[in-house]
Image (cartoon, rainbow, N blue to C red; front, side, top):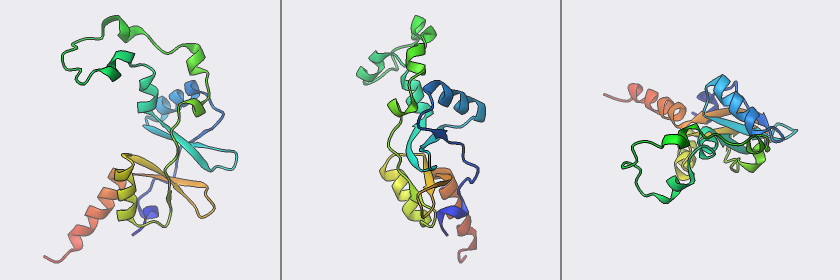
Length: 153
């Protein structure tokens, strides 16, 4: 089995010139956690996810703390949101480089790539490098586990 057997085909993506505000609106509207960022030729150049977005909301001190269990409430910080200037920047300023997988890649290799790069979702590309799908740890894991029922008893 390969990645095309379990990937999501109807992928929502965003153009590299779109704003962080536009990306956030798509994540909310589509209730998804990651957006492939594509160029004019629909080739992935990066990804932007809900984790990346929420770093704009988290107070700076969180990155300095080894443990936030003792902080019971962030108080007034909960009401502070990113500035309009930040939200109007292009997604290029916040995106991470795209780690992609070819559509004919085997499931175990694809899963290994997800683990190696600490990803939960990964864009799938065609032979000519265009975005054709997105796959996840769950998609691949379920596809692999579904074959176990056919194993010898």
